[in-house]
Image (cartoon, rainbow, N blue to C red; front, side, top):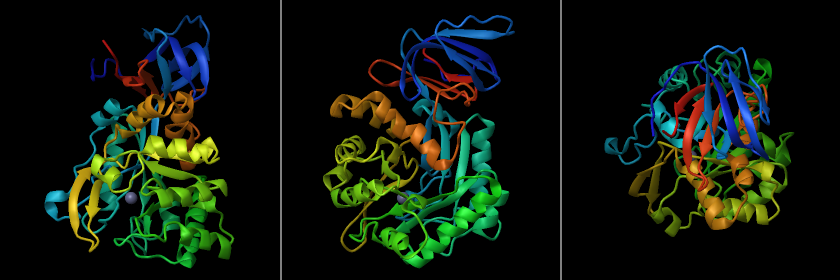
Length: 388
Ligand code: ZN
């Protein structure tokens, strides 16, 4: 296995790929030219492309690159003092994890972690081949911005796709009212409209029993739809998952956090593959569920007095791992699980070039083995990792 980059901006022909677009399209050849998918067809005949590199996928699954809507690319945490600050994400982690698109968020700390630093790190990742975006703001209101307002951040900064994660039902948040959230969602929408973006308001949901109630209230009182909010950590408790099912059945998209650990599961977290299976079983559309990694976040555990008990770190490879375990342990279809980490998150972010394997899309691809483990990654038409 190699993680080196054999040839920048190469033209590639990937033969005999079992294409999951994320729908199962059977065995196809994939032609990549200039960073885009040019064609996906059976037994493609190709000539006249100089320097074309040919690979044989030998019938193994090939999917779009994974799209992560929540990653703390400059590191999260710090909630137990300076020893608990998490490190920044290196580009190599993307190739190891099958993730080709990331969305950075600040999280709890917007005092010592800053948007200029996160924008610079997103551009660093982009220079190395990761498609990197970010949210303005953090857990708190009033929203901290880069240019002075939410609207101008969205209008002027190409990488800013929305605001988040704004915390609700969490002792670390600002306890925003339904009115404040409705107003913020309007700011996101107007800024996004001006820039031709979709606009996302990512909502971090904590463990307080109020859960999503303030979002339901905002949608009842104001001309705001539930789909204007994008709540994450919905697998934090079974009660929140039940609320999330209601939210998604009324048109919202819910996000499950793939990163977890045994101690969080023991204290009530629903493991993300189980959460997906359970939401689908409860009648949620497979279009209204996403998984994100929460990579480089701290996974803190607090006692009933809000004191930090222990801290772990979110992992970028948790998304691919959740797909694998969903297939193995919950008998879910690979294409359904893939949708939650490719097409659905790309739609939430409004990235029409991402999340699907079709002619014209960005050439972000993942090669899987039959046991649904990531074996190879191509991003922006360049091979980043490939089995030897
Ligand atoms: Zn969060």
